[in-house]
Image (cartoon, rainbow, N blue to C red; front, side, top):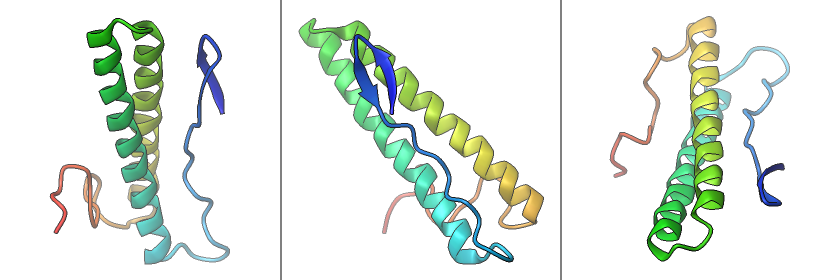
Length: 104
């Protein structure tokens, strides 16, 4: 948990540690799911920031939360991409289900 502003807490997500031995496809999928979850959390925070701005209720706090959520998403995205490139896994920027890919 991190204090964002005015004692507003936000949990920062982290990528799961690699399994003992060689990383497998299941672990790479877990990386993708964690990045996707951080995207969902950013969308949630952004929606609240928009609403706070419209309502005029603590928009600076909601904006700080949304900025923190975006930073967390972006850092996880870069970290996951770096791990996959290093392991020779899926090409960078691809995943089984990325935020830009419509769900079936």
